[in-house]
Image (tube, rainbow, N blue to C red; front, side):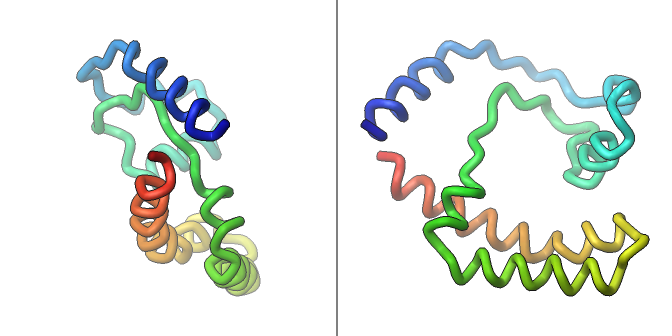
Length: 113
């Protein structure tokens, strides 16, 4: 069932029309401030617009409980350390998330075939 689903998703993704447009500050100016901060934090401004995304974060964390516990502990420590500074909280998570993203990609590619 999963392989059939992934095959159908890939078929639909192959139909996408990819452009070379980039995200601009002007385009996100009407979004809620937290979303704007997220786009800036992730480095999307000035980068090519995405046409699709695959979210495997939850699947990965369900399969890797040790990573889920470590991530939860990190978030708790950062929330305690930076209760009124969302930027510092997000910056504190960044190295862990970047490392985990690389592991997720490898895991996803190994499990989606």
